Structure formats: C-alpha cells, structure tokens
Image 1 (tube, rainbow, N blue to C red):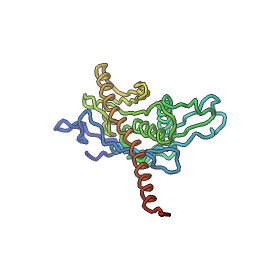
Image 2 (image 1 turned 90 degrees about the horizontal axis):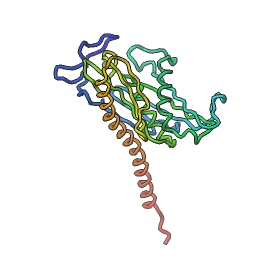
Image 3 (image 1 turned 60 degrees about the vertical axis):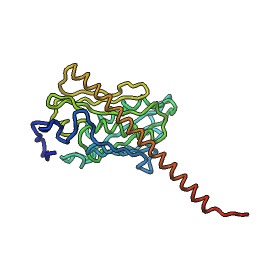
Image 4 (image 1 turned 90 degrees about the vertical axis):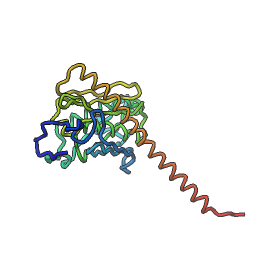
Length: 263
C-alpha cells in the first residue's frame, strides 16, 4: 500500500490485477482478531484488531448514576464514551473529546441499547469506555462490535450481540469494509449494524452517492459480512470459557495428584 502523506490519496483505488490497494477482493473483510477479558479491573472488556484498527472497550456497572438527576426510576441507563487517542491518526488530534467523538458515542449507545434488559436495573447505569489506539477507517463500526462483546463479557443480560460493518463505493464498485484510504477517497460510505435477536438494522448511516440498485447490493453484502463478524464474536466469547474450563481441569488434576492418602 502506498504511503499516504496528509490529504494526498491515489487516483485509483483498485490495482491493475483488479484487487483493492491492500490486496482484498471487493467482498472481503480485513483480518479481524477479537479477545475478551483483557482489562482485569473492568466488569467486562474486549480488544479488537480489525485491519490496522486497534480498539479496547471496558464496561463498568451496574453502579450508581452520577450526577443523580440522570437516573431513571424505571430502568437503567447506558452511557458510551468513545475516544480516539491523540496518536491514533496521522495528524495528532486534540486530547479533549471532539464533536465527532461525542456524536459517535451517542450513535453507539443508540445502537446497543435495544439488546439490553435495562428495565432490570432501575436507577443504575452501565458505562462503556472505548479507546481507539490506532485508527484506519470504520472505527464506529469496529467500536460498536467490540463494545457489544465487552457487554457480553460483563455478564449483562442481553437479547443478542450487535455486529457492525461499513459498506462503501470506490471507483464505481461496491465494496465491503472500507479502509481509511477508501473511506476518505471513495464515493460513498454506508456504516450499518444488526441486532441478531430480531435481525433488524440498529445502525444505518450514509454519506456519498449511490443509486437504489447499489444501495440494495450494499445491504446484501453487509448481511453476509455481518454473519462472519458475528461468528468471530461468538468464537471470542467461547475461547474465554474454554480457557477457564481447561484451567479448572488442570487445577483439579494437580490437586488430585498432590492429595494425601490417609489409609
């Protein structure tokens, strides 16, 4: 991939062999790695590497609401704090959360709220802290995905997980999972997310130029990609409990071997 300097981007986003600049096919996701239980003092946590994106999510709650006037007597509240670290992008950003970060925090909260049984936790709050350590396009989708994983790791009752991906258009073609270059230099960007308990769209934003046929094609590609992402989320959760089971079996075996025969 060519070095990107400031706002200068290549004129063509497909290589001569028909593949994208990073070697992917049009419908191919970037490599994804997920892990849960990575922050020990959090109630639930997860880490995600998605292409060059590196993101942590930590969940705390249920706990008292501060300030108290924000508490709801009939249900709990969900608050999301999305932040990009100052060194996560090419041009160093200001440390204070910007307007974009506040907007994405609100979008992620709205996306996750339908899967939570907040009515079981009146007058309390759940807080999700998302730290983008390295950003390379699609951070709101990746952050939504890893935040849902952290909530599940916290043991909070959920109707299902939430998975998210961005579909886009570059050089007149519809593609899956835009990289940073494709996001900035492409013709359209369509972030979307799905709640799996009812398979309904919980996030759909759009920026750019697409006709109706391209929009329908985008949603079809999104559904296939989201299924793969959902599988990876489930695998990450299963891996944690498989490791716990192995550790318990190992400890049990060691105790049996080290036991004293009193006969």
